[in-house]
Image (cartoon, rainbow, N blue to C red; front, side, top):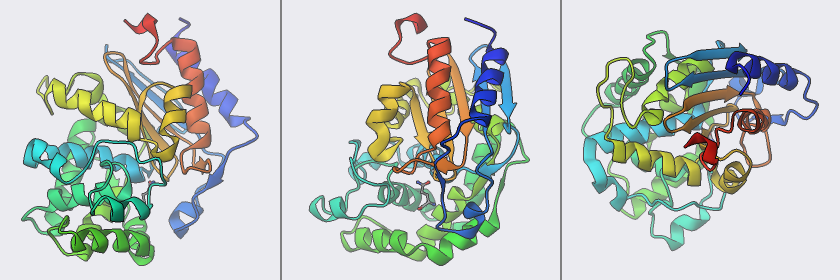
Length: 312
Ligand code: GLN
């Protein structure tokens, strides 16, 4: 394999020239205003190397990538009981779809579609005040990344709140089935704030290291989660992390991955690397167009797909 830093630089240069960059999310002004020419990538390897290219140190809205961290915290709070309220199957439908919820009695298919993440956030909220739960999330990702500069973009959170009618509908609908303990407004206040976490690719790749390392925080050697739980979170990222584009992501890239509508993707190859890419233009399923292409090229040049025998 060629030098990792050179591979990352080459990919960033290729992405700078890519003609088809997808469409930037436009449902809230702070996301619509992001420059579609941005591209960043960060790779953190199991042996501690960090390679960054393009806009890899520029903060962006991680959006649904935050669902991975929310799930990790909620599992820490209630353990496997969580799976009574959220499924572990791919949805095959859009991230904010309402249709399955009725036939499946208010139990969302998985923790990464919006409905599932809203239930996870309800669990996270538990008996806390919303601002305490938001603070807990922020402290958690700062600790995972080893970086206290990570922040929540209040303008994004406010804009989500102002336009989040469909998320409100999902939350209230689940409450009607008894699958939401708290009032929809309280839960969504926390949900919109964790979606509004602003992080760079470097910070995001660092925050994903525990999933690469069998649940262990490489900075401290302590376990964030057990190896079994890390494996399960990775499995859910692979099967559900890109919504109805999860099959295509597994087919083209073959890493555990979670996308966000801000154009970020966190991708994990257990034992090998934690990777974050960011390009704000999205494909028709709401996943980063160039982020996916960049990961596909990274796999071609490194053999880092989880399905590639060279890894093992
Ligand atoms: N905050 C966004 C929403 O709830 C997150 C969606 C996403 O990133 N796919 O609609």
